[in-house]
Image (cartoon, rainbow over all chains, first blue to last red):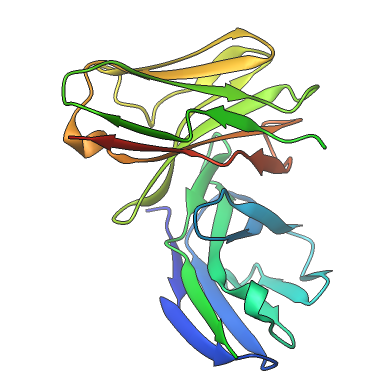
Length: 112
Length: 114
């Protein structure tokens, strides 16, 4: 079954600290993996898109990694800011017909 | 400032009523997606269009939901009749390709069916 699982479900960190969010998937065939940030009450905003051949991609303080062999991805946030408080959603495109399969998201709260 | 717009932003209606949600994709984008987000299910793809033609609506309950693109600047999602279980946030997104391309999301329509 094509699934995307994220961990942890929620996370609280102090401002300035780093954190890493995890995403495991069982989607086949695989097309690409995306990380989105969704602020409360807003639509998701794309952070990174990675294909099979890419194993790391950065967007400012956000760095995503992809291990296509183990079917794992992570999103590392460096020097967190209060504005990083949001839900982070891992999405895999694949499973035939290039469907988007969504993870449940990790809710991150950055406290001062 | 190009962005996807959605109307209305909030809708409260009674069970059995028709609901129409509208989306204006970013000018020039040829792919439009409709998603539904609930606390229990997270984000689900309902339907998507490329060049105004429906490519996949397998995620949509066909008996009550319908999605159309009357022209390149307007996409609509209708629910008739609405049910309380339809309460969710409905997002529209647009992009330039249906495979691998980045998608830009609108602000969503929060629907409450009483």
